[in-house]
Length: 190
Ligand SMILES: [Zn+2]
Ligand SMILES: [Zn+2]
Image (cartoon, rainbow, N blue to C red; front, side, top):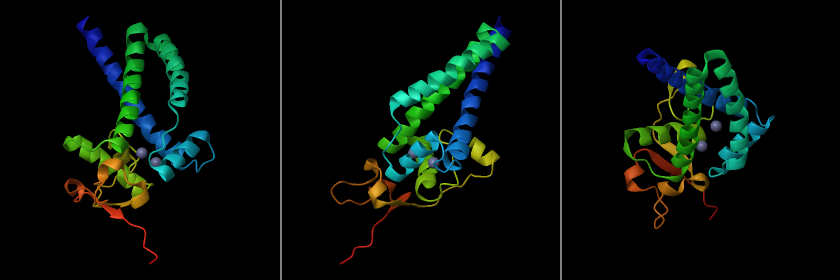
């Protein structure tokens, strides 16, 4: 009984790691290397060019049901009910955490070490070098595939700046984030 439960927890963890790898693979190999030739890639490049654009939730829901449904059936068939469902649960929970975190990085200021790290990792990818830092929830696969960079101060284009980054009064980066980010302003014509 205890062994079965431990194995179920392990399967849950393996499911979460499967999403973690998919997060990297989809983002880098389908989203960026796809260069706009597939739907996911077009949506992702739009997210880059607009900054606050996310693919519609219904599209994500349809895609996740189309993946998680068959995954649940196949893994229950291969591993039995307990382990198959644990694996699928781990994958699904990690996927929803990723979706929540990605939106949150764009919409809310950092709180704590992980929040600060995740934003710097992701916004380096957005604004400095889109060939690097593809992982959103963790740096694991960037380290494995040699695309990990520890950012220095990140230059954020003024028109793409996250709302939480700037003081609405002055239009400058909040002093508490000035060590991590600086605005790249358009040169004035005057
Ligand atoms: Zn993003
Ligand atoms: Zn990207």
